[in-house]
Each structure stands twice: as structure tokens, then as C-alpha cells.
Image 1 (tube, rainbow over the protein chains, first blue to last red):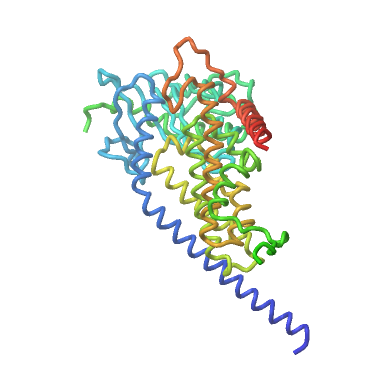
Image 2: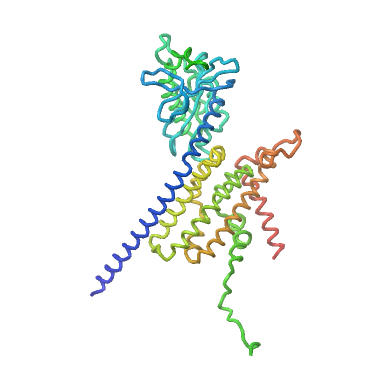
Length: 229
Length: 211
């Protein structure tokens, strides 16, 4: 056996060892992750639902109770007994005298690092977005994650215009993101310098979601009733 | 005859398990001496609770990865050791991520992406490569516990000072009368640098005095 064959044999043995080690560790690690996921799935789901309910009160100021409505395939909203994640749902908010005040709507889109999930409040009587909350984001700490903390950015959503056209079929001016300091219209979302992609994503998510949901909810605003079944 | 026996100065004494623990906790503290893992140290130490949670999460990953790396040290070929260590560390970070989500959604939100970034904390990879891959499971456990507790201690020192001065609270319990004006800068990123500098000065003064 010459030197070349010796080297070749040594490398093959080593490659086999490497493959066994990597595959073995990979399978073991995958098993650990799956077991942890299965063990915590239910508890995480419950806590997330509770956090979502709290967030509804954040985005609809002045409400004292909420009710879940699910959207049917015809675009109508019917009361739901519980949260079913496989369906499109909205959260109607009512004040202490059971008067309907608005709905909280979940929306999501691809941010810089991962999907950004948000909740916003829509008041059909003033035709504005009245609140905004980041439910889930993995944006860069100190930069992109400012979408959930920056006071100036949050002020975009105190009375963001989503007014409908005179024939009430669509939004008059779609919500659009603009750069920091460039906001001149009530339907514009002023971005954050240093968090350009993340803040633009929020503006785009709102633009897409409000364009679909706002006309539907506005037409059915009288059907949201705390006592409806 | 025993009087004539002299120790060979070339042979170093083997450190005991207690030495391995004390080393990480104090003598080679990962934050105050080695200045490792500065990203979470500065970013997530704005409150004592966040600092403690981040420290414990990191310590858990360090402990578990050290145990697994030490157990498999003769099985992992040296060519793929770093890839294997990263895989092991990433697994325990994912487990910690799920565990924190299952404990508190708010805490998970406060710690944010820094939980995932534990994977790239150089403290964990350096202990796997420099210690666990060359030592027994028992010693690796003591090393991880020492370094882990040292990391938690350092983060807690920063978090406590920043929360007390920046919020006027400690674990959300108000400490001062209403007239107290909070030092807002302490909970901002700049406050992290100031507090770390302060602790490093105190730590070094103490060490010089001890020497």
C-alpha cells in the first residue's frame, strides 16, 4: 500500500466519523427540541391568548369588555365562543354601557429579521386607527425593535386616517409609510431613522390590512353587539 | 529521607473542583475580568428582573452545553468540533426560548432577540472549546456553574444599580419617596456603559488592594 492509499484510507475513515458525529448530534438535538416544543406548546398558547386579550384593551382606549367575532367566507362577522387560530377573527370592544367602540385586528408581514405580528384598533365612527401594539417581533435590539417602544412612532396611531371613499367601497387614501419627518397627511405612517425596514413594514402591513378589513367592518358596524348571538 | 524530597517545579498542581467553581465566580469572572458577552450585559441589564432572567438563561445553556460537550469529547472528531458545539448550544438556547415563553410572555418580550443571541455568546463557546472538550464531566459542571453564577452575579450587579437609579425601584418595589427624580439615563444604553465602568473600577480597586 503506497502513501497515497494510506492518506485516502485515513480520510475516508475520518469522514465517516465526522458524518456519524454530526448526524448523531443533530438527531439528538432535534429530539430534545421537539420534546420541549410539545411540552410547552399548550402553556405558551394559553399565555399568548391572555397577552392578546390584554393587548386588545391597549389598542382600543376606553373599552371595558371584548368579544371575539370570526369572519365567514362571505366576509360577514359572527360571534365566536373562543379563539380559533385557523380562522380570521377580530376583537370587538365595548365600553361600560355595552356600546360598541371599535375592533382590534391582527395583521402580520415580513420584517427585517422575521415576521412582525401586530394588533391595531379601528374606530369605525371616527374612521381612524386608534391604537397599535406589537404582538411579536424579532427585529434587531436597539434598532428595529423600536417599533414597539418609540413614542414618536407610536403617536402615528392615535388618529391614523382610514376614511372610506364617498361610495363607501374602499379606503380613500391607503395607509403608506414615509420617512421620519416626512409626514404631511393623516394617513401617512412616519418611519424611524435607524429602523427603516421595520417601521416601513408596519406601515405596509397596516396599508394592506386596513384596505381589506376597514370597508368590511364599517358596513357591519351595527352588527357588533355585546348581546348578539 | 522525607526532608530530602523536593517537588518538581515543572509539575503544576491539579486544580480541584472547588477551584474551578471559584475561578469563574470571582478570579476569572466572565464579565468583570474577561469582559465577555458584553452585548446582553449592556442591553438587557436595565432592570434587576431582566438581568437575572438573562443571566440564568445563559447559565443554563452554559451548564447543559458543557455537560454534553464533556460527555461527547471523545466521540466528536476535531474537524467538526466547532460546528458540533454550535449545534449543541443552539439546541439549548431553543429550549430556553420555549421555557421563557412558557413562564412569561412579557419577560420573553423584554428579553427579545437577546435570547436567540445567547447562541453567539463567546463565553459559552469558549468554555466548550477551552474547558469542556478537554476535561471530565464533573469538572466541566463545576466550571459551568462557576462561570454561570459569575455571569448572573455580574448582570445582577448592573441590573440592580440601573433599576434603582433609573426607575427608583428594585424588582418593581418602589424604594424612594415621590420627590425622587429618576436618573433616566441609567435605563438607557448609555447608563449600561456608565454602570459597567463603575463596577469595573470597583472590582479592580478591590483586586489591587487584595494583591
